[in-house]
Image (tube, rainbow, N blue to C red):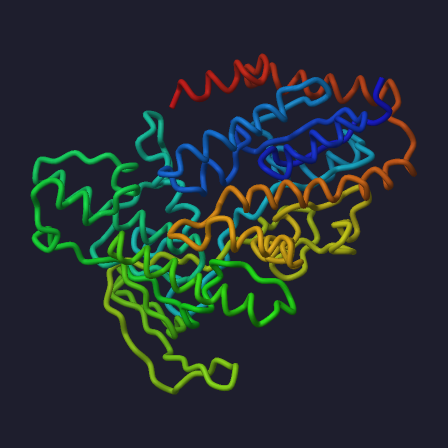
Length: 441
């Protein structure tokens, strides 16, 4: 019998990898997942034109979680239905690993955001969730309509995805009005202009007002190729050239615009309806960015904020600014909560990926394995998350060795609580549950 029963919060990339590694080391693992399925941002944050990559990564997670020694507990959200106090006093796990990711959008803290309609001012996570799932037969979440000329504030990979999604929606609407049905995957693969031309149409005749990505720094600074601290100049120059190439390829293929050196300053709206957004104009001099003292108004009826994601603030979870308050970044131990450790994006949000590839070997992997083309190497990013999760295992096992073994009584109580939740939601096994959920969509 396994010596310990431990809890893992979140079943996506980092959570499923940690669960598998702990099970391999002889632990019994209970994986709690807030959603019905454990795919996280692979399903809800990675736009749906990445269908092959999504299927591959989801199959990897399925293989990790559907195995002896791991019990999957869906529809169980930490901080709410599953409280921090319950995990401490009721479940009494000797170890809880927080791998619940970064799901909360970083707030765009400029005047005017408060009071703007949520149809007109949108955050990226809810927008991409809608884009991915709005065609599901049982979709009941917030619905959006992309307005002509939307402004996307931000400069990372997610901002590019948001701008592409906007363009696909605008072009698709125009084509449907002209009696054409176009497959999204074809439009992403061939590019908007080639698809429109293949239909015998002139793109200009569609009257598309393109999306604009507006970024506070230069294109060369956009976080499309992550860099570590102390990166040699040669690699820095290569990364900057790669960033420019990615943007050039994307704008040429998908038609959105990119405006650098504009820092968001104020959102304008009239009775809640967005009318525009003002930007402070920036300049780059002697290695520093500074405001020029000039401001520019960009008229638009829709603004989508894509400035990053942070861990969700949870009841009972100590916070340090935007992130969970941890004792040590290396171990991920949560301050003031015995037995709780963070892994993956639950430590520092998106910046965690950047830190995880600080050494030259990982940097080379990301730059040289596909980012030099027009598409970001998402597959490598998922691999980095799994690698980082694996690196925590030895630390976690060292901690467990200092703890008393899970008693038969405690083990029985945990199993009883798992079975009670399974009965409540009608769960009868990982594969059958997955098939039911997928078929209902």
